[in-house]
Image 1 (cartoon, rainbow, N blue to C red):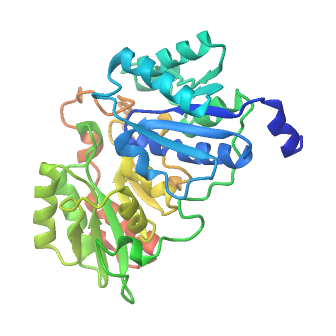
Image 2 (cartoon, helix red, strand yellow):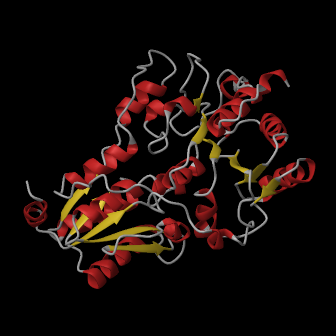
Length: 365
């Protein structure tokens, strides 16, 4: 079907798209959202998320409006959702709702939209399959549909199928050095730039800091290596500060409030990112750089692998208890978190060097 004809079949002009939740989940919407905008230039998409996450949508399509909202005070509870929906419908003449979250807040907005006769489409999260994959006994170890594919399907059910035009927040290039000069000067000749994001929300997804410090130590010994530490919070600042003081070429980003735009600009210029199954894996994916991802209680089979990331760069142990959780929020029933403690720092460092095409066997250090 020709593109112009397809655009006329959905009969929609202003589509409300909902995804609150954590930054990683919001970041995963970008390829599908930008692809839908590009494929349907006659439709205005109004994407609503938390205030703190609105700034990740860099170089947005002309027909995308990103609205950051305060869900803690101004739009708190179901009463706040009713007020929010009323305001958005009045301002943007909303005629359909795409729910990429499917939680109480968004279900209520869907209900309000349906009562007004608007078209709605919701994500199918595949909860039954995720339960089968993470239960303790009789696991079904099969890969599930990715979250990005589920997002695409949610748009498609309204006749708004995304295309594959999205290649990265900076297209196929990198952000100019001026965009991250608040963090560091431009790359020097012969330098290798690596990002490390060692923390996550839940313990089941955090590589032990003492082991990650060994990774930092090994990499910092490579000539021309610059290591940028991504994260925030008081505990992370303390850890990063000690690493920055002890190892050559290490820079902590936790002490500065640079903002997503600046940090994403720097990310786009890195050679590689080391990350847990966390938001930074997804943010790095959006700027089209390779990610060495470490997985513990969770598993790529759950559908949260970084966008277009190479499976060869995934580091995980073949334990029969994995995965025990979709989000890494369950206590380890073994009590030892072997899934993380068993990953050798030399393996992580060697994987980074292989991506940088640096020949050096760090397992002998």
